[in-house]
Each structure stands twice: as structure tokens, then as C-alpha cells.
Image: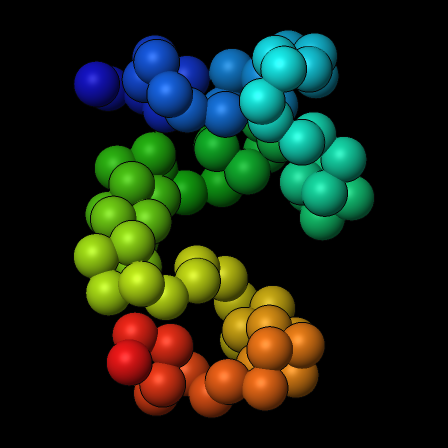
Amino acid sequence: MERAQDWRWSSTSAHLRGKNDGVTALAPIKERVPDFTDLLTSASEQDLFERLRAAESIGRPLGDNRFLARIERLTGRVRLLWNA
């Protein structure tokens, strides 16, 4: 796949269309990223895929330091223990 929206199981298409696909919760992403197209064009999709796959492979969330700090507060888990 060359683009995220081309992958059958990706939520990207729903976010780009702004239409509920019956599975994807649009509101949480819309609140954090008002223009989803900008998210995809801000970094190459290849870079995004690589970062996502790396995070998935070790069971850690993907996000900036502010997001990760919030997840730590909410879950009581520190980054070093996320894949433990």
C-alpha cells in the first residue's frame, strides 16, 4: 500500500471523508487534529507508517511527549513499563 487510505482496515478513509464508517470514532481525532489532511501531509506517510509499526511492535502508544505524559497520568504506567 502506498497510502494509508488505501489499506482496507485503516480508519484513514473515514477521517478524510469525515463520515462514520460504523467502526471508527471520528470525534477523538477531530478534537486533536481538526484538519486530518494536514496530518497526512505534514510528514511523509512512509514515516508515519514506520513510526506506527514501531510503536505497535513493542506495544507502546504513538504520540508526542505531551500526549505520552497524559497517558502516563491516566494509566499510572510509565513509558518503560508499557510493553512489560
